[in-house]
Amino acid sequence: MLLEYFRQIAAIPRISGHEDEVKNLLTRLARENGLSVRTDRAGNLLIVRPPAAGYGKSPSIILQAHLDMVPEKAEGLEFDFLKQGITPVEKDGFLVSSLPTTLGADNGIGAAAALELLLDKDFQCGELRGLFTVCEESGLGGASGIEPFMLEGDILLNLDSEEDGVFIIGCAGGMNTRITLPVVREEAPAGADSLTLEIKDLPGGHSGIDIDKNIPNAIIEGLKKIDFAISSVSGGGRGSAIPRSFSAAGVTLSNPAPAASEAAAAGKTIKVWEKNFQKKIIELLLSIPNGALEFEHNSVKLSSNFGAVSCPEGGRLELLFNQRGFDDRQRRELGEFIAEKFIPFGAEISHDSEYCAWRADFSSPLAKEAAELYKSMFNIVPRIEAIHAGLECGFFAAIRPDLPMLSFGPEIKGAHSPGEKLSLESLERFRKFLRRLVIRLNRLPENTGKEI
Image (cartoon, rainbow, N blue to C red; front, side, top):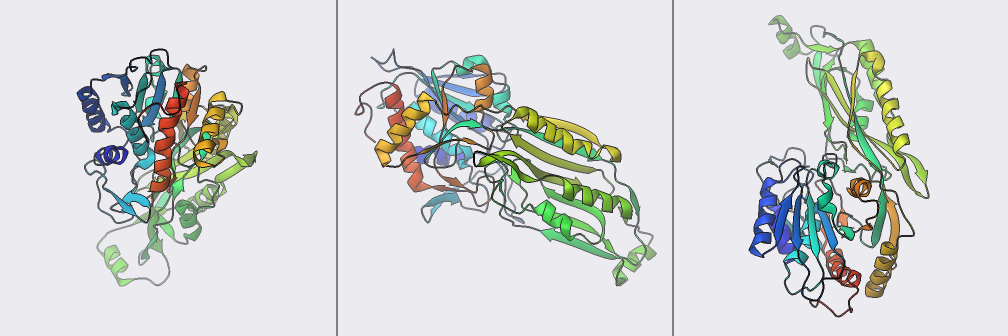
């Protein structure tokens, strides 16, 4: 049923801030099965399944996933994420979208896994609480506003990790730095040739877990190639994704074109960035720290991603940078350092979508128990580590510092990009392991519960 539930979830448009329809689906399924449903003021959904007979003293386990997805598509594809759902198809052992879009396994597959256990009446255990958050992909909005009653449990299993055989016990904090500044312009000389530069279909990737993989940033690659006067520019779009595309339009003074001369004769003028202003801005943008900036214990400690640039003809220049780090103070200082560089240009600066780091506890009894079970089931020793990406557990830990938490999930490649794909082999391991772990945490015999 897990894949069936995922297909139902995937079929519903559910970008950040537009999760009502998928919440309605989960609410209907829960109530049809006699389960209670609650929401909080942030829009998060809680489904509670009471303990089975004889399991009243078992711990209450929270199964947590987020409902929204990242809306990325291939350049030129006509697809409206507000109106169209995703159709998953199987290909070479993976589940992918039928079109070149994100699949939404991040984190629809976690939501489906939680839903499968909640609705399986043959699976006997203590209280299960399905916590389905909203707006995770837009700065962990649902988690940042979560109310304490949503976290009334004894153990929380976050089902939003993307690497098979890895247990996450900590995560980096993050924030966006937004910069808007006026552009100094001048009229392009008559007879100048129009010119457009486009970079598209780069691999892209997650600006946290993929930031150390030397994936090219389309904005930076494009800025390096500009050798003409800019009239407009755009690229990227989200702080959480390494930009895949970039475009810039403008004029060059070489080889005057008849079409451009005719436009000038008709009284049409093109405004372009003033030469010295453009030179200084491009040099500054290319000097801003980008990528993995500092390492500790063989993992990324601090990073920044140039996530978006936008400047329409005659408009202001808007920039988005995303910082991540395990040291919240150091991360904030990096954001402020970047912002200060633009103050001489009259920039307006803001920081948003900030979330705290989840401090890693490598001695976690929960992680140790999960690792022992995983090894006994699959003869694989899992890794226990902290991840350079945002997990909602940081906000949960701020409210419930005593709550044991663990994050894991199936193998998802290319999250936040149109190449996103879910390994079906790892999905089956994930499904079996989640069931057995819930049984184990109930302190029940290993053969208790529905056969898997």
